[in-house]
Amino acid sequence: MIITLLNQQTRHPLNLEKIQKLAEWLGKRLAPRTSEPWNEVCVVLTDDPGIIPANLEYFGKERPTDVISFRYDPIPGEDEGYTGDLIINIDRAVQRGPEEKGADYELALYIAHGFDHLSGAEDNTPEKKKAMLDTETAWIEEIGKEAISNLFE
Image (cartoon, rainbow, N blue to C red; front, side, top):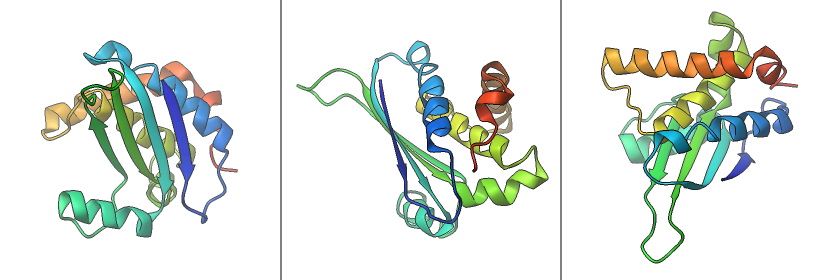
């Protein structure tokens, strides 16, 4: 699977190499959880102003959110396999991080959350939301603190 990382925000210096490695590691968790192989996932790092248009267009909400994910089915006649987009809001991770386990952890959690959605997981009920958080937390624990530390420079 190809993981493309696009940093479209300029407010927060990021360690893009570490974020790329984290995304690649999380991407490997998709294949066993979906019916089709994966071709590509594009991870877009943005900020509050950058995520509002997508949140408005696709969900009718004119406000920032933390993560938006899209999974696309294979196109007939082309290579089999899913593609997907993750839009990750860096501003939300920085703002929420101090309330939780820090901005690095929060950013890792957002990226894991996006990949979890790509696998088909939903968080539209309290039970499903808890199940997703349990999965994402387990992934972060498995990859370890070193892999998610210093995502911000």
